[in-house]
Length: 372
Ligand code: FA5
Image 1 (cartoon, helix red, strand yellow):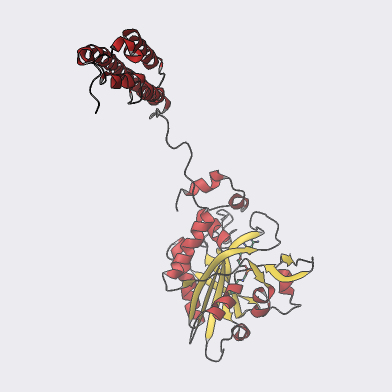
Image 2 (cartoon, rainbow, N blue to C red):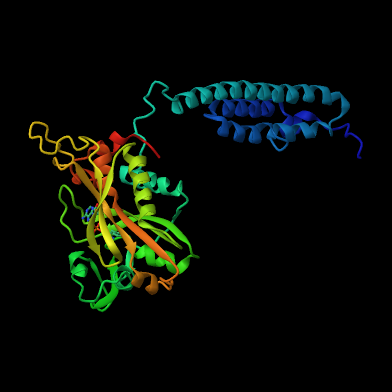
């Protein structure tokens, strides 16, 4: 270390000259005052109070002064640095207070605003009804099966014993899917959930106990009781020794689960190519319980005073269907049913017009609550 230079005069060191120290102090204090926010103040601190600030550099010069001059210069520079430090502190307090006030205003939350202005969504009642119906069968040990909505004609018709020229193919008024060249694709929008019967038999071990809820399509016009897109719930049992009595029991359990206890059901002979014998399933009208039949004074709008409501089709699985799905009809027998979900919703909740179910008016769906 070199010894102090005794001939060194502080006033000749520019940075230690009282005027210069005063100027640096004034400049620093002005910059502190001018800092508009905490970020600017940080810059000012770096420029005027850091180790590289003019006052800090001047302070370093003091070491080289003769001892007699040190105290005076130290007092001057130290005082200036202290003033700048205090000014920075004071400005910091002011700017922090300003920032807090601004944040409180900018980020304020009006706790008096209503919190539920955007109403909670809910699932469509058709979905919840379909799930409730499926649950009834799951509770009896059935599994849920699925199939595609765009289905191969073979699954939708051929495997279900619809002959190529069978009137039922047109009876079902099918949406055929065009092939890429505009010709036939061999695909249809499935007209019922019955093709899932074949898919379930091909993909599962026997015995099979499944229900298949899903969307179905027909070229029907939208009216009070029909929609071109609607939903069915298919049921299929294939096992050794199953009988129509089991089918009747399963249907009764469905009716009781959806509509309540004590309603009778009946089978009316019908025709489906994939069941033999086949039947339409009716349930006793849950509104008038048959009391309106032949009583013009007490007509029933739910069953049109017929006393019975049709809820779907059913039957014993045709042995040809079992064979198409690789099941030996000599060993196994089965039964199946197909229920209309829209009809179930209409009857269970008194919905009079199918338009309400498909037009997406939330005044309709919200009446069913936000069940999910
Ligand atoms: C069938 O679709 C058969 N696959 C049902 C079946 C399954 C029979 C298994 C035997 C064994 P059907 O065409 O009748 O059958 O239709 C069944 C139900 O679907 C009808 O009872 C009705 O509730 C409903 N449904 C039919 N067409 C429409 C439509 N356009 N809009 C709303 N629901 C419909």
